[in-house]
Image 1 (cartoon, rainbow, N blue to C red):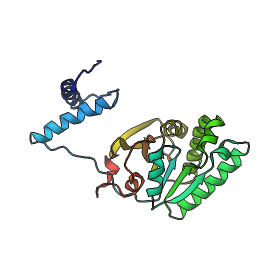
Image 2 (cartoon, rainbow, N blue to C red):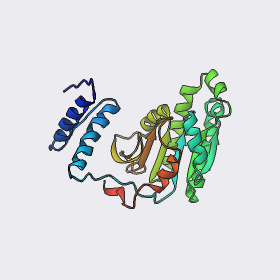
Image 3 (cartoon, rainbow, N blue to C red):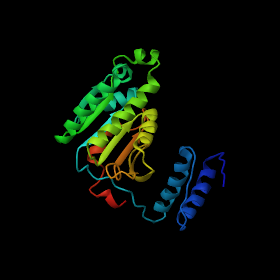
Image 4 (cartoon, one colour):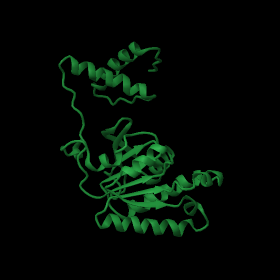
Length: 239
């Protein structure tokens, strides 16, 4: 069934139809822009106002070290990196990640990240902002996203982690494909426009990871700290 929307009243009608369908036994797949979420949430808000109780999923505090990979060069992500005080910061050189010695450089960074995680530190690895124009002019941006994906997979193969974050639209999409997961399921919201999913994969090393994906310009300044702290005391394992 295909819907088109002209104004907010249409969103409310579509939201009611989605909510009714979601209550049925069959799974519901809704594809579209943010208006899909807006339509559905508006229905939940109306239900809450009429006396129904809407249960909000809670993300618990991380029980083990968290790894975040930030491949985005956006200004907001840069601010979020500076605000992430609970992490050990590891700066990645984009030109070395995509140059002739990329393999040896990446393996050295993977070893450093895995060692820090193994010793109990949260780790935030981010691509350097010092020469963004040099990276863009070199034509290395597509290769950089693939290099980030290789680094992520190598880190997760080296260390079994509970929670991981990826910042950057292109980085996220390529990195998720590199994991070889067969599915993602919604776990809980983290910030406006940012949610945490659960990874489903045949590999026991990857299956069950709580994964935050975000575009470069999404999320609040303290987003990476929230990924550690969660926003409630409930354990989300069964969500």
